[in-house]
Structures are given as C-alpha cells and as structure tokens.
Length: 334
Image (tube, rainbow, N blue to C red):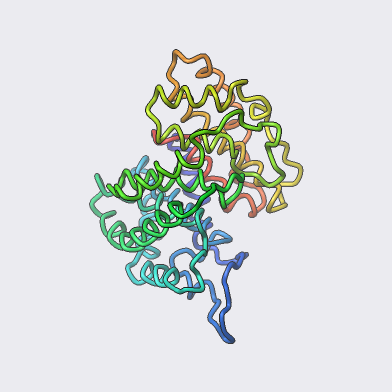
C-alpha cells in the first residue's frame, strides 16, 4: 500500500464512517416504540451504509494510520477515531449486543470484523501509545464477541459454505488473526478445531458452482485460506493438493459485473479483491518451489488489477466497503 493509495483509501473511509444516509437497517423490533435511530443505537458505527461496513471502514482507517503514520490525513483519522472510539460510544455498541433480541445480530461477519478491528488497533498501539486508549475502549466489546464466536463455532455442526456474509471460513480467518494478536488461546483453539471438523476431510472442491451472482467471497478460496492458517506447511500443501487437484479452473477467470449501481451485483467487484487476497496468502504458504506458486500469484495480480479501479468514484453501494477489501488484498506492507 503506497502513500498515494493509502491517502485515497483514507479519503474514502473518512467520508463513509461519518455518512449517516443511506443506511440499511437490520434491527429487531420487540415492542412498540422501540428505539431504532441508528445514531442512538450505534454511536460509533452509524455510517457506511450498514453496521459491518462501518466497522471494517474504521479498520481501514486504523490500518492506513499504522502503515503510513505521516499521511496528511493522519490528524483527521485520529480525530474521527477519538470521537467514535470514545468509551461511551463503544459501551453503547457493547450494550446493544447484550440485548436478547440481538443475539444473532451480525453473526459471524460483523463479529469477525470487530475482532479484526481490535487486532489492528492492538498492532497500532505497539508503536503508537495514543492508540492504547482505543484498544482499552474496544477491549471489553472484543472480549464479549470473542466468547460469542467461540461458542458459536463450537456448537455449529456444519459450516456455512457461502460467498457472502454468513461464511464461517471468512469469519474464522479474521477472528483467528484477532485471537493470535490478542493472545486469546481459547478462541484460537476453538477455530482450529472447527476448521478441522468442517473442512479437514474436504476433497475435489466443486469449482463449477462458483461464482454465485452476489458472491464477494470465494467459498473455495476462503476455506483454503483458513486451512492455510491452521495446518502446518507440509500438511497444508497435502490438503490443498487433494482439495484442488486440478488447479483453479474457473476461479482464475475474472467475475463479470453488469451493474455497479446494484448493491448485490457489485459484490462481484469485491470477489475480485477477496480472491486476490486469498490467492496471495495461499501462494506465500506454498513457497517458491511449489508449481502452483507462480500461477496463484499471477491470478491474484489479475484480480487485484480488475478490482482496484472500482474502489472509488462509483456508486455508493460499492464505495462504502470495497476499499477495505482492497486493503486486505494489498497486504500488511507499506
């Protein structure tokens, strides 16, 4: 992520996290006159079209600040984070998740992004002392969702093999990053056990069924990405050779996006970016001597080149979230 790219991402995210409308509501009314004003219910994450997008666009601001602390936008980023991560705002967000009527709200996608946000804040706090106050404010909320995530995946007998928000593999990839960063051994162990239970015996991924019309994740690649995280290198290479015995097949072909003003169809731009992210990480795990290493990197670069131009300047239904997936694909290096 170069300084110019970081600055562009920061501008998009700063505009989004404070934009209240349009807002997609996901709230269970349990009685007459129940409060449903998003700014009241979600004083930290009221922007960016929906709750989970607000969370991962805040993550993007934290990542930009960590990788490029000298950006001209740094002061504006810090001001927004100070306001939105104020203890009272985060406490209100935390209380919302304690309500019995909100037990499954944003499970597991939003939960995982909140955990990934805290992981990024913790990394920033290692060399930016001011960020410690954000980590302290977010800490109890993240602890709560980590426990909920651990309980959920332990009880789930099956994974959700889908290229959208309910994906258990994607949620576990992000949550595992948090668990390892925060030293949450219980969550790490739960994710590792669930991955083996759900995916350990998978063979011959049905590539011909991808993509579905509104996918922004590849069920195949995000599963492989999770197994890359939980298996030793040799064991992962063996697992992948059985899971993808004939290579990438149609996963190497760019998705076709026919209407970027359609909130569902524009997901396919995100698919290009998330495929690039997964393929880069899988290629790195395979090593230079693996015959698939060069192919996976080349396909990742193709998808990244297709997805990056769609991050800004398009319709808000894509602009409110795509930059965060672009940042995932670009990696953790300035």
